[in-house]
Length: 227
Image 1 (cartoon, one colour):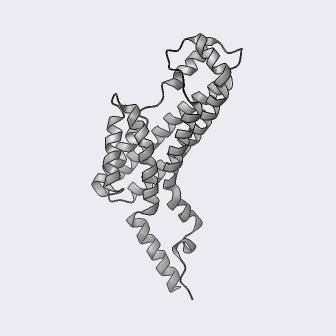
Image 2 (cartoon, rainbow, N blue to C red):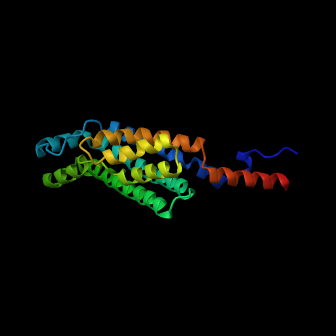
Image 3 (spheres, one colour):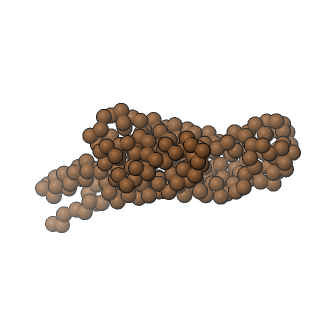
């Protein structure tokens, strides 16, 4: 009798969990798609008259872009859970895994807040009954962005990877650097590079499951073969 292959033997939930890091790829792709959909967005100093004219013609694309960014934020949260699970299975103190989970929660909340502003602007931006001052207030909340939102997550994951190889060190060092640089004057560019890091890390974690997970899979396969 042929022995079952790993993909046949693992429960569906375990297979899904192993693919969870790919949420990092989805986060990066949907963030880029959302930003490109919104396209050139007026800054916070744009006069109210120009804002009214802008939203009269661009409200739909702003709303669609906001929706894409909201889904990106959800995938960021799932990616954070995958990173937390990887760090939790290492020999580090539980506080480190807790910091990763906290960072994921903060980043997700910040990204959802920004996305919600775009969705709201897409809904009300063209309505004649909206006061110009209210429109400007919502616009400012959206145009300010969320630079630095992933700082805690990146720093915690970077430290975990450097100390215990919870993730490969060639990914851990960039994570630590990007997390620190996010609160600097060039934080915007660090946020862009974070998208590349998230996609690359998600792919690597799927291709290279943690040692604990590999050991558990091996035990499970051995038990199935023996039975």
